[in-house]
Amino acid sequence: MIIEINEENIDERLIEQAVITLKKGEVIIFPTDTVYAMGCDLFNKKALNALATLKGLKLKKANFSIICSDLSNLSDYVKPIDRPTYKLLNRSLPGPFTFILTATNEIPRLFDTNKKEVGIRIPDNKIVRRIVEVLGNPIATTSLNNNEDEILEYFIDPYTIYEKFDRKIELIIDGGLGKLEASTLVNCVNGDMEIIRQGIGRVEL
Image 1 (cartoon, helix red, strand yellow):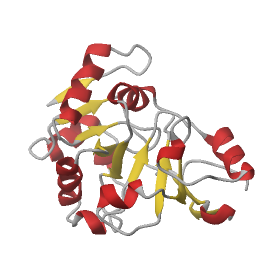
Image 2: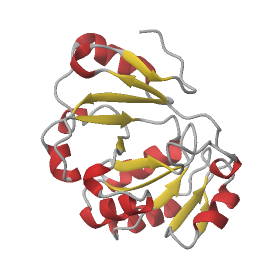
Image 3: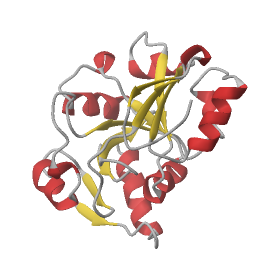
């Protein structure tokens, strides 16, 4: 199923539809401020396993980020960060960045892994942030493409995405054309800041 949500005039009934789908343990595709992404309820193990399967991986081998609506509950998922790192996050988010931070013990438990880090996203997109707000907790997320794939046109056009994923994904949100460039990946573990992947976001460290 595909539904259209206007970012500048959000229909709360459609947001609720997306949240109900997530709470059922389904994976959805949604717009961000970069490429379209797929994701699920962070606290639904069935959904996390389904998301990993869509990427052709076991959950413990997956490298998912989490999307938060703002920085207010960050401490639930990442260990305390120093002031320079917080200032960087505060001035960059919402925005097209993924910040790698040291995870709390909650993250390994959720992802069946011993990983000590997690990627944090707060996209500059009102649709996905509103979904996270109403859901009440973050979404686990990953890109539509595999790392070895180029980011091609089907990652930006919602109806081309629908044609490709309709039989695999319960709900696809058309939030307009996406972008062809991914988020900028910044490693902030241990207070050291390093750009791992230069994407659409520009930042001075």
